[in-house]
Image (tube, rainbow, N blue to C red):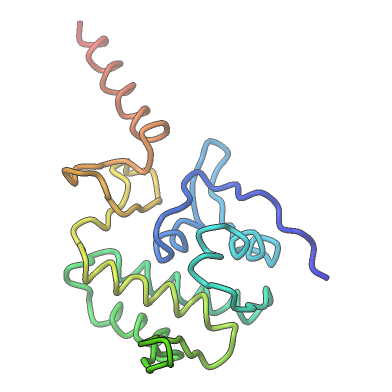
Length: 190
């Protein structure tokens, strides 16, 4: 039996699945981090409540294949998110390569219409779902998919604020640092 995953160390969680996958890399005062640099990190990510909800009750192996496919999806999402409204051909091809490993189907059951997801192997499910989730965000509000306004931060978020003007991955982190820097600059001038 695999070890129980540890607590999620990332500073920003509970974003939509595709952005949550992107945010498995972050920078803090101690340096750069990558949650998906090990199978233990993969287990931690798969056990997260947001990820678990997105994958349903599917049995996803926390193995090298799943990790490799997630890294492929994260790279594709990285390319696509650089310009969500106008992704380049390479980004489109990379994301479509992930999406090619699964499909969503529709059928009628005795209790009404239903949908299902079918992937080549269970190890493709998290990667495919993340790519599919990105398409959902693009269809809904692509202008709300954002990188943090701090140029030294690598995190992304989906802006769900009422007026759509969120700039920071978190006000407690990057937003607070920006305010402190502006305050320091004003004090220095006087």
